[in-house]
Each structure stands twice: as C-alpha cells, then as structure tokens.
Length: 224
Image (cartoon, rainbow, N blue to C red; front, side):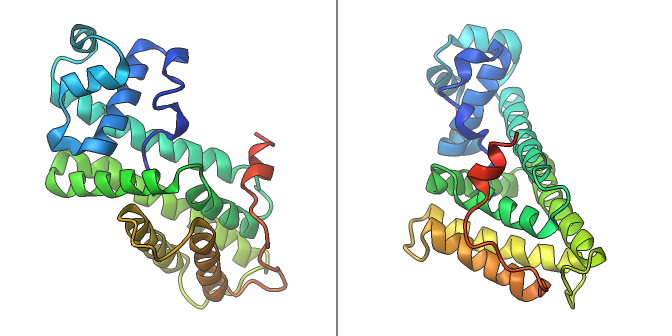
C-alpha cells in the first residue's frame, strides 16, 4: 500500500503552497532514504528550496519528517476514499477498482518500495506507527464496507466475516508489494491484479456477478 503522495512529489510542487511543497519533497525523501537517513539538506535538494525556508515552517528535522509522514499517509487515504466513491452502487466493482488503484499505477515498483520503507520506519519508531496503522485501518474499512454492501444486495456470499476477508486481501497485497519492491520477479502488475481479484472472488463468492475482465482505473478516474 504505497504512501508517497502520488505524482505530486516532484512535478506538482510548483502548483501548491510552499509548506505543502516541502512536505511533498520530504515524503519523497522518506520513501527513498528512510526516516533515519533523511536530513534537512536532502529535503532541501528534493524541494529546490533553502534549508532556511524549510526551518521557517518546521523548527526541527523530526517535526518535518513526522508531519511529512502523516501528510503522505493521509493523502493516500483521501485518494482511496475518492476513488471508492466512483462506484457507490456497485460494491464488487468498487473492490476491483481499489485493487486497480494499488496495482496499475504508473510506477508500481516505486510505490511498493515506498510503502515497504514506510512500514520499516514505523517498526523502528513508535511515533510513526499511528499514521501507518491508519492506512491499514482505512483500507480495511473501505473493503469491509464494500463486502457488507455486496452481502446485503445478494451479490456475495462470503463464509467469513467481512473484516477477515479484508485482512486476507491486505496480506496478499502487502506480500506482493514486498516482492515487487525487491524486484523478486514473481509477479507483473497485471498478474498482481489478477491474483488479488482471484483471491477476492474465491472468498466473496460473487453470484451472479462476473469478475470484470478489464481494469476500471482509467474509466472511473475519468468520472472524478
């Protein structure tokens, strides 16, 4: 579950406020260097601004990195929620679309490496665990809501609790993301997507709904 602020990390920074631009650059720095090795001079280079300007908004390195970490995780959750709203009346397609959002982005390996690095940093620093936990909780909530709606509409007949299904899907996604981050050569983006959807289908037993054969990412994104 990548959390690096999407495509705004570099190309979009000129279009946003200086403080947020610094947070975006710091999030990119965190994704590539990790919490322990990121320094103000690194963020300065990523942002294209002076260290003095950074310190105008953030008194210390730790304050900057903590806020950048939280900002990146919150931005990811907001993007997921927005995407989920593309299919409010079709829970199965909403699940498929969320999987598309995770697997069919322009740079899956970088996003996978980002999320792996964020989890690793949170494992070493207690103060970073909250934002990462919120990402897990937010993803689970979106999937659980879709499953419960599908069950209520008679579109799915899962034998397990919705949260258990969501947690299994999360484990599958994170496992493939770790393999992708280290370039293990196990899955392409297309196979990643297909296998996660296959697991979801086997757990949810959608009937009579057929698993959509093509990605919904571009189609739904055009509606926002």
